[in-house]
Amino acid sequence: MDSHNRDPQKRPLFSSRLSIITVAAGSAIGLGNIWKFPYITGKNGGAAFIIVYLCCIALIGLPVLISDFIIGRRGGGSVVSSFRALAGERSPWLFGGFIALFGSATVLSFYGVVAGWSLEYVVKAASNAFSGKTPAEVGTMFNDFVTSPVAPIVCQLVFMSITAGVVYAGVKKGIEAFSKVMMPVLVGIIVLLCFRSITLPGAEGGLAFLFKPDFSKLSAAGVLDALGHAFFTLSLGVGTMITYGSYIDKDEHLAATAVQICIADTVIALLAGIAIFPAVFAFGVAPGQGPGLVFVTLPNIFAQMPGGYVFCILFFLLLAVAALTSSISMLEVSVAYASEDLGISRQRATLVLATLISLVGVVCSLSMGKYQEQLTFFGKNVFDLADFAVSNVEMPIGGAISVLFVGWMLKRRKAEDELTCHGNITVPFVGAFVFTAKYLAPVAIAIVFLHSLGLI
Ligand code: PHE
Image 1 (cartoon, rainbow, N blue to C red):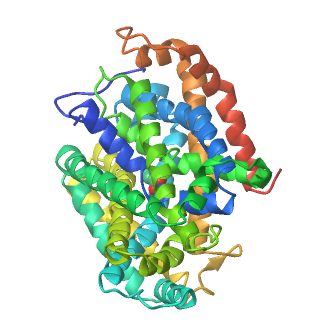
Image 2 (tube, rainbow, N blue to C red; image 1 turned 180 degrees about the vertical axis):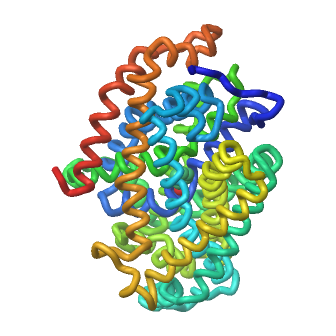
C-alpha cells in the first residue's frame, strides 16, 4: 500500500535543489506577497502584525508545507493518487485529494481575474495614465475598470492563456524553465523598487511602521488574518505543494527545502513591504487602505515621485510575473490529476481545464460589475464567494488533512524515513515536527477555521 510508485522513466523530476526551490518559491511568491500582505499589514497596524505572521509561518505554515512534501514525494503521484498510494483505494483520506482539486481550480478562477488587472495596469502605467490625476480620479479609474464587462475579462483571458501555455509545455520545459527565468527578474525588480522607496525623503516613517512593533495595534482578528494568510502565501491546502512534492528527487532534504522556501517567501513579502510603505509614508498617505492599496494608492504615489513612470511600470510587471509563477502551480494540480489518473493527454487536459477555470473566472469578474445583482449569493458576489470558500474554508481543511494525515496515518516511522531520505541524512527536530503535525497545527487551524465561519 505504502508504495513509492514513482517511475523515474515516466515521471518528470525537477533537475536540482535550486530548481525545486525556484519553482516552489515561484508558487509561494505571488499576489499574496505583493498585493495582499502589504494591505493586511497596513490594515493591522504594521510591525506587531508582522511578528505574529512570522510565528504563524514558522509554527504552522512550515509543518504543513513539510507534510505536503512528504505526501507528494512518498505518494509519488497527483494529489489524489498520492493519497491513494499511501492510504489505500477506498480510504476516506482520498477526500483530501479531491477537496484540493476543487480548491486549486477555484483559487485559480478568481486569482486569474486579479492577475489580469495587473496586466492592464502595466499598460496603463506605460501609457502614463496616472499622471496628473487626483487620488479620487485614480480610484474611479480602478472602479470603472474592474466593473466593466469586457476589459478585465480580456485581461484575465490573456493571463490564463499564458498560464496554460507554460503548463502545456510540461513540468521541466514549461514550469521549471519559465520559473528559472522569471524568478530572478522578480527579485531584480523588487530590489530596485525597494531602493527607490527607501531613498525618498521621509521614508523613515514607513520603515518604522514595518519594523517597530506597537502591540496595542494588534487585534484578535489580526492574529487570525496572519494565520489565514500564512496558508495562502505558502500555497498550502490546495494540493500545489503535494503535486510539486511528487516531482522532488528522493535524495533531496525535504525539511531544508521547505525551510528555504518559507524564508524566500517571507523575504519577498517583507521586501514588498519595504518597496511600498516608505513611499506611502513619504507622501503622507494612510497605510490602511485595504485591497485598493496597490491599484489605487500606489499609482498615485508613483505619479508624484521622481522616476515614478518607470517604477510604476516595473511594479505592475512584478505583480504580473509573481502571479504567473503562482497560477501555473495552481493549474498543474488538476492537469497532473487529469493526465495521470484519468489518462487524458497533458496537452488536452491543460486546454480543457484552463478553459473551464477561465469560464468560472469570467463569472467572478462579471459578478463585480453590471451583473452583480444576479451573481450574488449568501450576501457575497461570486468573486468574494470563491475567495471566501478557498481562503477561509477549503485551505484550512486541506491543510489540516495534510498534517493529520502525516501525524496520525503515516506515523512517525514513515515520516522520519521520508525526512531522513531513508536514514541517509540526519534531521533535527523530527519529534517536534511530528508533535506539531499531530496536535499543534490541527488545533490552531481549527481555531482559525471556526472563527472565520463566525462560530467562535
Ligand atoms: N501563494 C500564492 C500567493 O501568495 C497563491 C497560491 C495559493 C498559489 C494556492 C498556489 C496555490 O500569491
